[in-house]
Length: 196
Image (cartoon, rainbow, N blue to C red; front, side, top):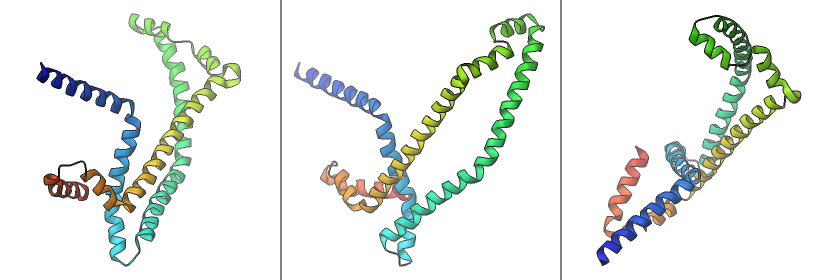
C-alpha cells in the first residue's frame, strides 16, 4: 500500500509540474529562448575577447550590432511591405468582387458558397462601419500582438545578457541540482551542447 501511495504521489507531482509548466509556458519559453540566444552570441563575444576587448565592451558591441541589424532590416523592409500590403488589399477587393459575381451564377456548389458570403458592398460597408472602428480594432490587435512579440524579444535579449555576464554563477546554480558524482559529466554535456 505504501508503494502504491508513493507511486501515486510521484504521478500527481509530475502532473502538477506539467500543468504548472503549461500555465507558465510563455515564461518558460522566454527563459529557454534567452538561453539559446546567449549560447548563440557567446562565440562572437569570446572571439572579441580574444582580440583584446573586455567582456562588457564585447557584449555591448555584439548586442548593439544585433539591434542595429534588426532596426535596419525593419527600415529596409517597411516601405516594400507597405506597398505590397496595399497591392494585396487592392487585389483582394477586385478578386472578391469578380469571384462573388462569377460564383453567384456558377455551379450549384459555387452558388451555395456565394450565398454564404456577404455581397461585396456589404463587406466593405461592414469594414468601414462605425467610422472604420472594425478596421481600427483589427489593426489595434495586430499592433498589440506585434508589440508583445517585440517586448518578448527585448526580454529575451536582456535575460541572455545576464546569462552571458554571469555564466559561471549560472552553471554552478544549475549544477547544484545534479548529483555530485554526475556534475562533471553534466558540465561537459552542457558545454558541448552550448558550443554545438
